[in-house]
Image 1 (tube, rainbow, N blue to C red):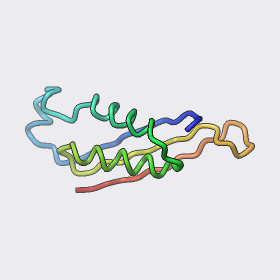
Image 2 (image 1 turned 30 degrees about the vertical axis):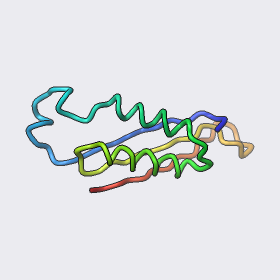
Image 3 (image 1 turned 90 degrees about the vertical axis):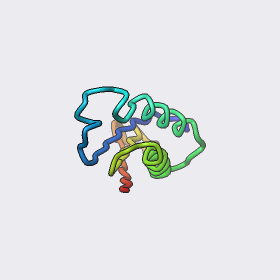
Length: 94
């Protein structure tokens, strides 16, 4: 897509015994988050909104959580301004 993007993923849900065990194999795997973001980043989407929606939907399909919010920031879009960023967020709930 020819520019720099930043992806922020926020997730929340009911705290149960799995999350209180302090064990990586019993919680949402951060590698999965990074992997999905990389896959979607390599897609041919034209809009940052499309990227946010796709990441949120994919992560919700593999997570045991109640809500995911994905924020995508596009750095220095080609609008003639210097140091301007554009950001959007999209949330999915179970």
